[in-house]
Length: 268
Length: 246
Image 1 (cartoon, chains in turn green, orange):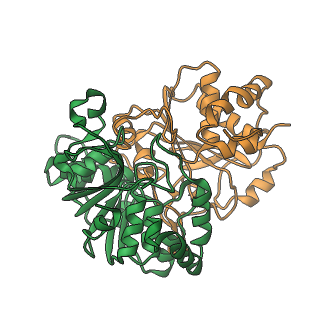
Image 2: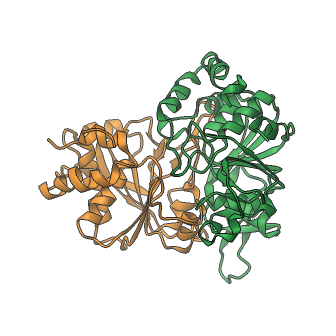
Image 3: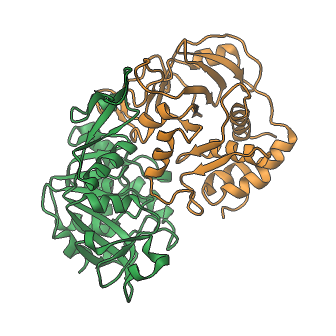
């Protein structure tokens, strides 16, 4: 398997969940999705979005994004996201970080919804007719809580450090990816490398493993998180992030970026 | 020569240590917040027993349950103090991290609300920090509310903004009145210059000058605080304190 063969498994219009730039975002896979020419994706940021989301929006792959923020971190605002919002070509479902975690936790438990505090009085809540406000049934005094529906992404994708032949993948302490994998219908993972044996038999590795029970397909993609960091494996390529942020300010600059860094398969 | 960032960090440290406030035993600092992070390290290195959870520290990050753990802690009331900012902040301490113009920010889109709609209501104390102090940031009324400054009694809320620190001054926030009041002016500012740069109405027209950090605070900031922060904020440390980024 390669990132491009993983990308071929993503149908147009899928609800695709992606982690942000500090949590194993699958950047090589996102570039493969651009090459595949996927259309109408609905992206979910878990719980925020970064480079991969901005790239897919700029390449015309995305109809809707649900997220708590889109940012390039130190490199600044996400230019193609901001342009698509200004043009009105992108549907944005604004959320707030713990609400996205909670909707995924409801899905992993198989319950229809979960309550969350906060959010009352926020325009984020006012623009979410799918989120409900209800009286806490265990309280005798007025006490409103927000009820959030379970959310099962069609596909979740991330870039893990390693996988074994049993389909187990190691994400270390990024346990929000375990919740995401539990909640999603299909999970596609790129990894830096395959390792021998079964990681679930190693007590020191097992706590950072997502069991193969939840993983559908694994592909090796060396440096597959580039240009973002991968835990302690390699740091972010800050110079490249600045280059992207600068180029993507205009559509012409963005197209030149795609031609140079994304469309040639060798750039995978 | 005291750097502006050093003055801001010291001002925030004084607010953290304010004895009139509930204790700050556990402070969390979010992304892209080097000045609040410096203030927290200063408080810690002055010897105060405070637990710091720095979300974007690449090494030694405090959380092992993923990014939801911060919000779970805050939901239980186990984070005492947090920092927030905004693309717009208004006179009732409403925060807008969404954008300006028609929903969802058609005129100028900001990144988004992050966890603000939850954290602002779950933590007992929030210190607002925004270096740019201009009528475009400090507005009479935010275009969109990411997180509300005050809430009615039936909305569970542990606290509100304690203060707003900007590049020009420090405002205190009175939650009962839902109004800011001028607490101190940074050197070079006057009551008139701050009034002219502020889009919202606030109480107080005169205030003392924001105190200089004492020499021992400056020594801490330039030595051990900078050492702790270089790994997370190399560009900030190089700009404020010089030397090569690690």
